[in-house]
Image 1: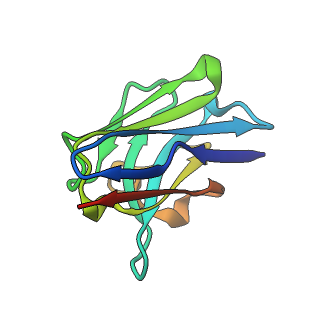
Image 2: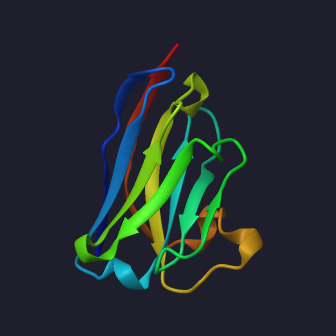
Length: 126
């Protein structure tokens, strides 16, 4: 059971990146997935959540309107499209999955997730 985040890189402010979260060893279709990020010296924070079929999504206030989460269950992959990037978006981005649906007020809590991938670094220059 493994998740792998990819797609990070160095981009100028205002630019875009698309992150991918691919699963191996299990079917991601059956899992609720959240993207988290962690900047140096800061706690890990929930960025965006998507339900198993993609019908429900949530976003942190700091990224709402700029980031879009989606999933392609045929490819066993969840995406995070990040537009209008800002220097404060600089962080290591992780994807995490859980088999049961989190309550609405708790989707962003890292402690709820047991399946984590290695992160991908996103650096936004000013």
